Length: 119
Image 1 (cartoon, rainbow, N blue to C red):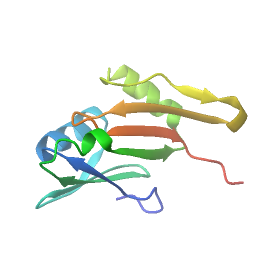
Image 2: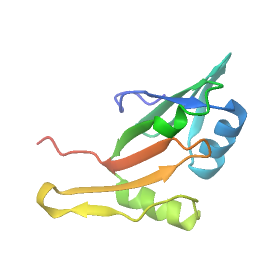
Image 3: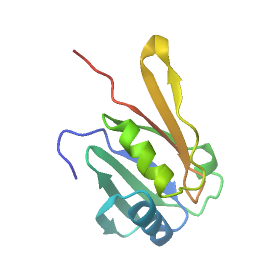
């Protein structure tokens, strides 16, 4: 995993192999760990931990916010990759925030937003 990145988010997965394939092949994440009932995927400063569940309702209720300084490049990459469930970019001028959303195959909602400038 990348040091100094975002907190590791924890999301449910109904099938860890399907999750691994989707995040690796579609979203460009590296798989850092696959263990009994767990999977950790990362990309640059973004990390997500998945745990296996049989409760199909959990992913429908789960959202995580992933911050990146390269939000525009990431969005363009996902447009080029034709990622299903990719939203348009929402921009809020007053707060200098840009964000977009993706639903993964299990219906977890991923919110990607620009990393805030703390200077």
